Image (cartoon, rainbow, N blue to C red):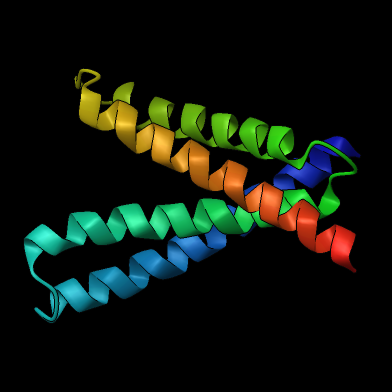
Length: 121
């Protein structure tokens, strides 16, 4: 049963990510946003998707919502790392470490928001 919970979390992360990607691609295609701004939008987009997934897992957690968000964040980072670096010969830099730490923080923050929303209801 716990496995299904994490599958739903990944869907809550991947669906907004897909929709945000379509939006950013359209804006970039029609030259509404410049190239140098697209990278910032990508970071904001994936952070919001991780926050949404963290909120979902936080509402499903019974205690230690931050730990659930940390687990989900680490799992998504491992998946992103495998997709990004196994297929391409890129090294790990300070920039990528900061990027992954931002994603981990947004997932953890989302789960803390989710568990506190659950306690208020």
